[in-house]
Amino acid sequence: MKRYIWNTFTRFVDRISQTHTFHAHFSLLFTIGTMAAATALSGFYHHVNPTGSANIALIYILTIILISYHTDKYRYGIVAGIVSVFFINYLFTYPFWEFSFSATGYPLTFVVMYFISILTSATTFRMKDQARKLKESEKLIAEAEREKLRANLLRAVSHDLRTPLTSMIGASSSYLENEASLSAAARRDLVSHIYEDANWLLHMVENLLSVTRITDGSSSTLKKTPEAVEEVLFDAVATVRKRYPDLEITTAVPGEFFVAPMDPLLIKQVIMNLLENAFFHARSDRPVECFLTGDDRQVLVHVMDFGGGIAPERLSSIFDAAPSAPSSAADTRRGMGIGLSICKAIVTAHGGEIHARNHGTGAEFFFTLPKEEQHHEPEHPDPRH
Image (tube, rainbow, N blue to C red; front, side, top):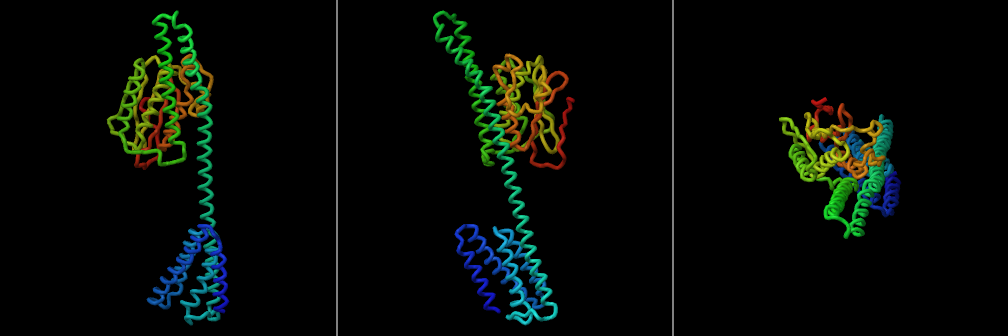
């Protein structure tokens, strides 16, 4: 009987050893090592308490769970369960060092343990397999979202970058063909348009490089550190004021000092994009308001204009980089698609959300930045509404 069991186990080991994959070798070595460790621990416990075979069975069941979880096939856990039954009978059940299934209660005990071992192995492996499939599904969903963003950005690029390029080509062509007949003021005006459009294209390229950083599937590209949100806000407002002297901005921050983990350059870019969007598209007849609100879970950054608002049918898709028909000459020169989609990508990468809504005399964009400590359900406090 002992020789038959040993030969069967040896054939199993030989069959497994013939595989050449890393996972098979790891699974085999892990199974043998874990069973050896369980047997050694059971031997020590049996030496201390010779009548504790029931507890030894628990040690082997725990071992089977570990083997089933860390190996890649059903067979490792099942074989470990079979071997465990024989080890307990041979090593830790009276009469010791021999097989005996004829004693009262032994057959039922070992049959029950055998089926528990098999069920434990199958259940553990199934749970691990379901977790793996769930993880793969999440990866597929994330990849689909990235592909959707890339496709939308490609459409937005063709829409938002084509117009300034065409304008630059037209202005430079007019300058070259009519240089002799143009006045100094006309030449300066053409060069100014070229300069303005070139700066806009540079800004868009910077935006595209930023979104590439956070949509390449690598979590290491986003470097978040605790930053004072007020400082990032003031820095963004100061940069926009230098770039667009005609844009009037008022800022307001609460007395509380808000700190949130972020990539400050990317969040600054989000605020700048929203302010530039208000400057070029809102046609606000009052200064654009930029202010902060928050609670113990998150910080909210608001940019509110006082212009024509957003068409209701666009509110649900305004961050999807889907180009739409321009509503004015300003929209023709400066498309919204790329900038707002990049805002959404950056905020989402930080674990926040971005929204747009109309108020009584214009539109408001706001986004959230989670704080490090989160204890309550998120709210959207806004003392101005």
